[in-house]
Amino acid sequence: MMRYSTYRSIYENNTEMNSTDQRRSVWGNSLKLQVLGDRLVNVLTGLLRQDLLMKFALVFMLVISCFTIVGNVFAGTVSSMKQEQRIVVERGDTLWSIAQQNKPADMKTVVYIEGIKQSNGLDDSGIRAGDVLTLPTY
Image (cartoon, rainbow, N blue to C red; front, side):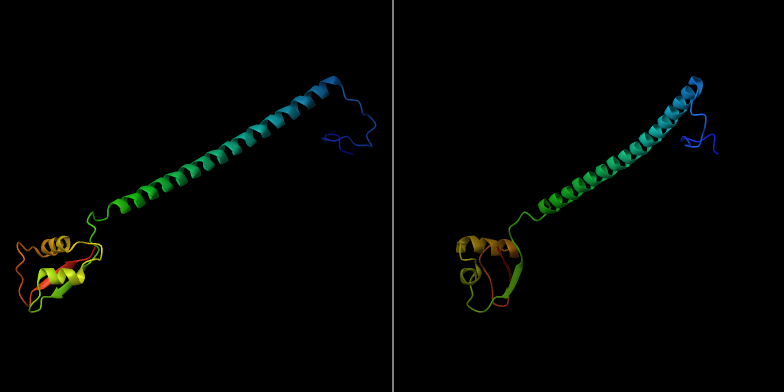
């Protein structure tokens, strides 16, 4: 027969406890509950801190990636030129005829000629057969 158990045996003859034993039992149980509660609070606090740390790290990484993306978008070239095309000037070609053949449909010929001059570093419209011109593509 177990005398010091946490449950009452149905075989025990003496079912009465004196008041001192009852107080010790109540205080002992409350201390055990308090220790368990403290442990539970410590575990939950640790988990909460880890959870907050993970959330902070995630938000920090998202902010950094957004700044990187925005920086890459605005770090592109300011000019609207996409790529260059090279042609060899043939006999009888003028900047006007070259511009007429290669300019975008919605652009004025004069504006495209100025783009050709800037791309090639020309001061005037004088070109010769055999010259290689770089044509801007808008």
